[in-house]
Image 1 (tube, rainbow, N blue to C red):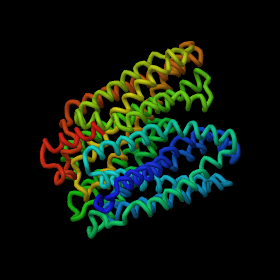
Image 2: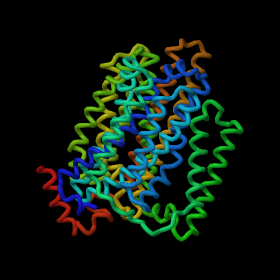
Image 3: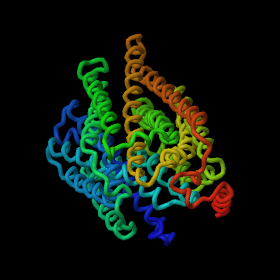
Image 4: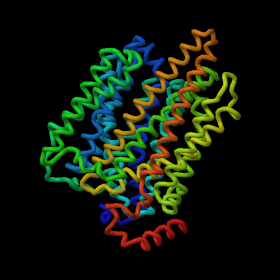
Length: 496
C-alpha cells in the first residue's frame, strides 16, 4: 500500500482525512451527552428510556468492533472504512431528522454499527500507509490525540450547537464532514484487496463474539440501574461469558478463525490490551467524573467545562505533532508509556483531593495539566505496542481488538467508578453531609480508584512490555535491517 502512496504529502493528507473520520466518531460519544436534556424535553423521553439514546449506540459499537476489523482484513480496509462512513453519515441524518423516540434510538444503533467499522479499520489503514518507524510514530501520535482529545471537543461543540441552534444539529453537522471524508478517501486511499483475501469468514465465531460483546455491554451500561447483583445483570454477564467460551472453542477448531488465538501469544498484543483496559477506565474517570464534579459541585456550564479541558487538549496536541514520536524513537515504547501513565495517575490523585469550594487554578488546572501530559506521552506508544508485532493479514483484527479493549475498559471502568461514587455519596448523605459535600466525597473516591488503574497500567507496561521502537516490528522488518538502520532513522526523525 505504501508503494502506491509514494507522494509523501499525499500520505499525510490521507492521515488527516482518516483522523477527521475518526474524530467524527469520537465526538459522537460525548456531544450527545450535552444535548440529552433538550432531547428528553422535545421527544418526551422518560428518565429510564432516555438512556437508550446512549446505550443503543454503545451496544452496537462495542459489539461489532472485532467483526468490523476482521471484515477489513478479508475485503479491504478502504472498502470497509467507506461502508462504515456511509452508514454513520446516513444514520446521523436520520438522527437529526428524528421526530420520535423509536426513530432516534434505531438511528443511534445504526450509528454505532457504522462507528464500530470505521474505528476498527482506521488504525490498520494508518499502520499500513506509514511503515517507516519515524513516520509511523508521528502518524500514531496524531491519531492518539484525536482519540484522546475528541471527547472534550465534543462537549464544547455540543454545548455550542445545542444552545445556539438545536439538538438536531449535533447530528446534522456530521453530514458535510461525512461527505467530504468520503470524497477525499476515494481520491487519496488506493483500493486494495484485504490482506486476508480468499479466506472464508468465520460466521459462527462472528455471531458468538458479537452477541457476547453486546450482552456484556448491555449488562455493564445498565448495571447501576438494574443492580450489580440482580438476576438480569448476573444472567447477562453469565451468558456473555458462555458465548465467549464458545467463541474461543470455535476459534481453536475452525480453519480460518475470526480471531486466531495465536495473536495473543504476542506479548505486545496481550500486554498492551490489558494496559488499554486499565487506561481506558482511568481516562473515563478523568473525563466523565471531572465533568460531573465541575458541573454539579463547582457549578460550571457545559461551555466552561469544555474550556477547562482545553489546557490538556493543547498539551496533547503539542505531543501528537512531534514530541511523542521523538520520545518513542529515542526511548522506545516502554518508558514513555509507563511514565505517561504514572503522570496521569498523579493527575487523578490531585483530583481525588479536590474540595467542595475548589478553584480552577488550584484544584482543576494542575490535574488537567498532568493528565494532558500523561495522555500525550502514553497513548502513542500504547497504540504502537498493540499493533507492532502484528502481521498485515491480521492488522484489521488487531485494530478491532485494541478498540474493543478501550471500549470495554471504559464502559466497565465507568460502571465501577460510578457505583463507587454513588455508594460513597449515599453513605455520606446518610451521615448528615450536605449534597455538595457528599457528591465531592463520591467523586474523590472515583478519582482515587482511577489513579490506581492508571498506576497499575503503568507498572504492567514497565515490567512486561519489551523495550522496542516501531522499527522492530513484524510489519517493518523488511525495511529495517538491524539496530543501526533503526538508529539512523531515529536520528533523521529527530533532526527533521
